[in-house]
Image (cartoon, rainbow, N blue to C red; front, side):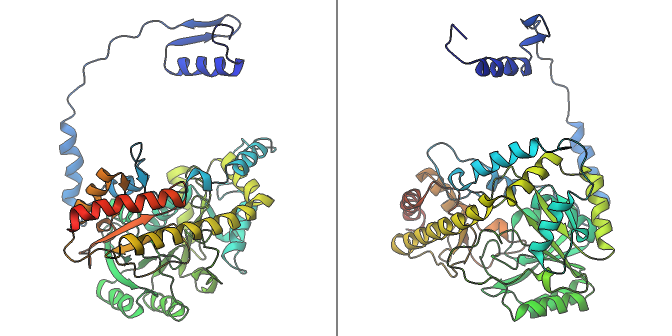
Length: 445
């Protein structure tokens, strides 16, 4: 402390880091000592046999599993320094409620029993809070707390469809869900969407043609198109699924990222479901932080027990301190203040990106301006090489997302998805648009 002019906390952290690296050992009452030298790195063995072992299972599978995380990793990757992030799937730190989350975590840690084993289904108070958000007739007994939305979707697909079965998905749709389906040995079947959401007549035809028993959709601010399922189509979707004897997995992931000028929102599909057709998925991750991985599965009837069983087998339960912190956060006055701030800031960023695209990149078609969420979906000129444009954009200093991974079959056209929530603000959005203009001049000319 005296030599380096640092605090006791800094010294303590340094010793903890050295201990974790195996360079120092601590002895209570004696002090910290240099650890014995470690032996040299052993030579690696021959792991080539694993190629045979890992591929042998596929020979007996009706639909071979495809374990490919590349599309998911694209949205999770941190771009190189100096690159503007139009590819991010989470809020920039300036949009996260960091102080409120820190205070909630501190309060949660002092709660009685905060570090004991939680109820398997999740804390009753947290489940009740989520249930009220879904609809008036839903209760805590219908809700299961999960480790974020991705975990909830994985559990739902594993519970509802056996390996080899078809599963109907919106086209285009979230690549992470396609990755879940393929890793589970399921066969995604596309159902096209337009500006009013999934097309009912094509959904009914897909059920008849495939015999599928599951349809996965995002009725509110669909990813990537930003479409909202229209009021006229909502009862149609439920009716079609009920007649097919199928479940609708409703991924309601952006309800808390609605823009300030959005107007009244449609209720979740689950709120209008009386027959147990809908399995509802939502999460606190998107409006807070990628590390607050708390979500829920909500369902009625025997399917809830199957969902619970698979969730328990996979991960036992969600860490209690995280659930307690989530409960503290949503119960604090800071929560609604944060949502109002987020609605205003996301609207401003959406408007800034939209204006920049119209001014500097008019050849990129923007068919729909969403009333919520954190991204725009652009159609590229016919014949554009998506990947060439993505690579050129990265060289110009901006990361963007290609549209191809959002389709489980042949895409209707080339697309880009641009996110506006992972950047620092409107000025960085303007800089990113100018850099994307440079890339388009290189590829589209």
